[in-house]
Image (cartoon, rainbow, N blue to C red):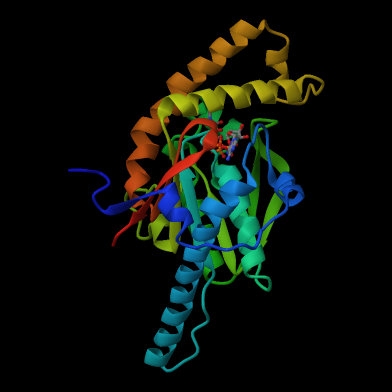
Length: 306
Ligand SMILES: Nc1ncnc2c1ncn2[C@@H]1O[C@H](COP(=O)(O)OP(=O)(O)OP(=O)(O)O)[C@@H](O)[C@H]1O
Ligand SMILES: CC(C)(CO)[C@@H](O)C(=O)NCCC(=O)O
C-alpha cells in the first residue's frame, strides 16, 4: 500500500498560491529573533509556505470553536472551547524546533489577543541518572526513554484549562535541568514539538495523539538529515569551546576527525535507528507533511485528504 495514498501531494508553487497576500508578515529582524544555529530560514519561506499553513490552522481553530459551541447546544450548557494543540514531529535534527518557533511567532501575529505557547517533549525525557539506572543511556530518544504517562497527563491538564509546570531539557548539559521548570499557563494555543509527538504507548486508556487538533511532520531525505545533524554538532562544539560546563566541551579537547567520527556513529547507531524504527512509521499520522530538500528548502507539502 502506498503510504501517501491518503494525502494530496501539493507542490510549493501550487501551495504558495493558495493563500496570496502582499502584506509582509514579518521583518528580517523579527525572523532573526527566532533563528537558531545554522538557520537559513527566509522571508520567502514565510510568505510561500508558512502563511498558507497559518491560514489552514485558522480553519482548524474555527472548526474547534464551532464544535464546542454545537456540543454546548446539545448538552444545554456552556462548553468552553479547549486550547488548540498542534503537534510537530520528525527526525532528530530535521528542524522541528525551528519550524515550531516560526509557527508560534506567526500564530501570535495572526491571533493578537490569544496566547500561543511552545513546549518540547525533550522535557519528558527521564534524567540521565534515571536513564543510567535503567541502562537506557544509549537509548536516549527511543520511546522507553520518555515518561509518556507524564506527557499524557500534561496534555490532558492543558486541554482541561489547568496551569502546569513541566521539566526543561538542556542540550548544553545533555540532561534535564535540575532546578528549573517551564510554566504553561492555560494557553489558547499550545505547540508541542518532539520526535515522539505522534507515538502512542501501548496499554493506555488515552492516546497522546487524541489531544492534537492538528499535526505536522517535518520530513527530508535521510542523508540530508545526517548532514544537518553533523553540521549542528559542529556548531555546538564551537559554542562549547569556552564553557567547561557544556556537555560538548569534552569533545573540543579531542582531534576534530575523532570527534566527527563519534558524531557519525551517534547518528548511525542511535538517531538513524530511532528514525527508522519509531519516528518515520508515525509520518502518515500527521495532518500535513512538510518535505524539505537541500538547504532546508520546502519543495512539497502533503495534506491529508480525510
Ligand atoms: N529552515 C531552516 N533553514 C536552515 N537551517 C535550519 C532550518 N531549520 C533547521 N535548521 C538547522 O538544522 C539543524 C536542526 O534544526 P533543529 O534544532 O530545529 O532540529 P530539531 O528537529 O528540533 O532537532 P532535535 O530533535 O535534535 O531538537 C539546526 O542546526 C538548525 O539551525
Ligand atoms: C534529545 C533528543 C533525544 C531529541 O531532541 C536528541 O537530540 C538526542 O540527544 N539524541 C541522543 C543521541 C545524540 O546525542 O544525538
